[in-house]
Each structure stands twice: as C-alpha cells, then as structure tokens.
View (cartoon, rainbow, N blue to C red):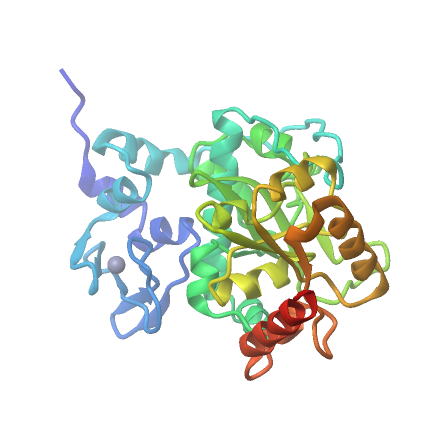
Length: 352
Ligand SMILES: [Zn+2]
C-alpha cells in the first residue's frame, strides 16, 4: 500500500512560479503568464518558457512540453513522481548552515583536482547550474561578459555563470544537498557566505562534471585586499583541457577570458590561469606536435613564454600579440581572430 498524494493541495501550497524560481530561472510578467528561459533546451533570444500561476502549469513553446510543478521538478532533476513530491515538500525544512572547516587554500599550486565524493560533485554541478541560469538573467553580469566580447553560444557551451551571492545555499537545500559538502569544496564559507559572490564564474568541466571553479569580480577590485580572480581551493587544473582532446595543436594562454576568447573562435585552447606552468602541465602539453604560446605581451608573460619554449622545444611557437596586452583584448576588436591568425603567420615565417 502506498500513501495517496494530494497533488491538488500540494500545488496550492507550493506555487508553480516559486518552484521554477528555485532553479534560478527568472520569470517576468507577460499578460496573465510569466515568461523565462526554458532550462530544457538552449533558450536563446526571446525566452520560451511560460508559467501560468492561475492554472499552476508551465509550457515551453520550443520544446512543446509542459505540465505542473511536480513534472517540472521531475524533468529538472530526473526524479520519479514521489521523489519530486518529496523535493517540493522539503522546501519547508530549513537546516542550519553548518560550521565546518573549509579545505586548505592551495589553489595556486598543483594541477589536479581532488577526487571529491558524490555529495561534493553534486554541489559543484548544482552551483554551476544555478550560476549559469543567473548569468543569463542578470543584466549587469551579462553586460559585463558581452563587453568582453563573449557571445551567448560561448557562454552556454562552457557553462559560464554568475554568483549573485544570495542564492546558492537555498538552492542546495532545495536540491537536498548537504551544505557541509559545499563548504568542503569551498563554495560556501564558514560563515555561510558564498565564496564566489559577485563574480563571473567559469567551471573546469571533465567528462561532463565540473571539478573546479574560478570567479572574476565584476567590479575592478572594490577593496585592495580582494583579488580580481578567486579560484576554489584544491589544485588548479589546466583550464579547458577537454577542448583539446581531439586536436593536433593547442593554444596556451594565461587568463580565463583569453581562453574564452579563443574558444569563441573555435580554437583548441587551455589557460594556465597565471603564468606558472609546472612540470605536470609541461608534460601534458608535450603530447601536442604544435603549441601556440599566446601569453600576455608584458614582461612576465614573455618570460613565461621563453621558459616554455626551452621546456617544450621547437614544437612550441611564440605568437607575438600585435598592439594588445593579451588575447582577451582582441575579442572586442572588429577582426580580432584574423589579427591573431596573421600573428601566427608571422611567427611561422620567422621560424622558417
Ligand atoms: Zn524548452
């Protein structure tokens, strides 16, 4: 015997617009419905998800699918009917933010992400999800990334997000994920605040699973002791490694936005996230017959490029960026990609 679930009173107690909003999907009034971006397809341009508070239903005009709050949760999380009901009812529970010791800050050393357990991995995935949904509906954050020359397909392909700073803990509770696990991976501080709050967040994704996150402050460092970039604790990976797996050549850059710029142009690329390339990074790169070094044109970048040439040998080719500080600066120029490829041509001529 199973208990009968009174779906009608459940849907009355938990309005559909609140349930959809739990996943970081912003809804704007439009006539008698609310409109937002559909999470079940890549929803570019005009948003396609309609939510009808009066009938407690939703519908996506692109996917051609819809239902009620329960079916929305089922689809979002791949849950069965009863688990989805339990998830919805679970919203009334508000466990306290645990006091835990965060992982040691070792984010500038090493290159391998720790092997997290299922809870930690689920927290990282949930954070990437809510941050990505937030970016697509946050005008200020979206304006920032667009001003840096990035387009929507690039942001979607690489699951770029924005940490608003006040959503993650509630979202993790809603998903039934332990906040202790989020604290262990460094997403949540000891005082319960979000580690990457106020930052554009770029995940490193391996086999579909985010393993590490780095955030860039929207403001140009509001306080002198606040770094422009902040990465989660644990070892820093070569950012974007999976974009290179079937490539014959690879581009190596310093920064997160350099990397996103190269990815926008469809080039296989990784970022050091800094200038330091350790022995493991050099080993990983040496499998490529050709490595284009597109590091910053300042003294530190050029010194790092020279070190890499001596470590990697003739397979490494230094690309001198013409009249710009870094690759990301090319993103906002009208023919930035052509300018970069001309620079490669010059480097190849010089080598020949
Ligand atoms: Zn859809």
